[in-house]
Image 1 (cartoon, rainbow, N blue to C red):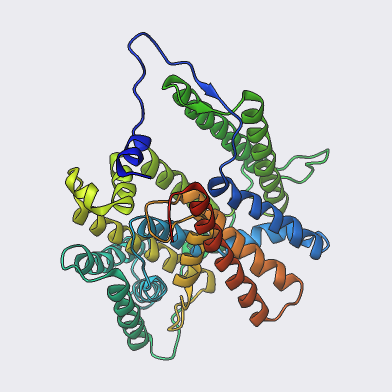
Image 2: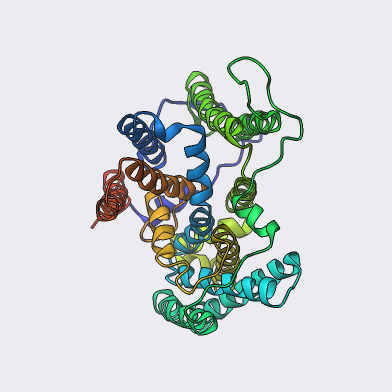
Length: 416
């Protein structure tokens, strides 16, 4: 495929002067975008069968979300770095050092928890700025910079904490990590939803409405510019299936202990970062740099500045994950965060990120993280040994990357 043809394909056509173009309706399937969601559904069904339904019990669904929230937060930052064409090996160590800092401020020094949380996120931003400077402006590969960071920040954590943990954390941080929203409006009294939290159900209905609105506006925009859209029947069927899955999860959460606070935080992050990557100039610059760094620079994109701020962002998200993880354990320990960066990287690649950069979505990374979480949880329910869990996760990661390369070859995007 020639460069000129590729560039033309990336340009959104303007509507003709005589009025909106007639949309092209076509039934199509994009394996690179849809394959991850089909795989996720199949994995859930498989472990649901193997665990005799225990996987989808209300308490277990809540546990999957709460126990993996910090990995999902890291995956949001990691997918942006990978789209940019870099990697971050220091995320787990940054989780440890920021968790230790939060513990020192709140437990040892008695700093109010909101100030301590802000200071911790500020420290995460400084760590990200430190690493971003060496990558963006000094030109050292991110692999080397973050590998050094992994060692440096782990050493700082161990020096600060020694062989002891610091805790317990304030109740507010523990509630953010492990707690649930109170039943402000009570529970449903009768019927199949008996005992379900009303607020949680209303939030679920609001999310479904937002999903329908966003997808309908996106389809209307493609129609307005004469782009190809799928038949309305298929479009409606996909929305209905997505709404049913979403409401099933919400109902299960409502039947257990309402909405986890950390899920609310995660939802805000996912929605916010999805909007940034898809609807802002900065988001388009991230994809442009990852797709072709030289072309992006020639087009006026401030490559170094974008790279710098993406690493700053990763530091902030790692600090948030550090607070959540420390609050969940109710102490900050020297071994916190070990291998978290590997789980976040795996989530991004399983979720559809390309090895070469330029491709990936926040929702895809979250889906990849949930696949890893379901595998962990499902095999734990089955009583599988940890070595078998690692084996399966490694095979899933390899299969995801192999699938990505295969689909590129099939589409003629890449020749290896």
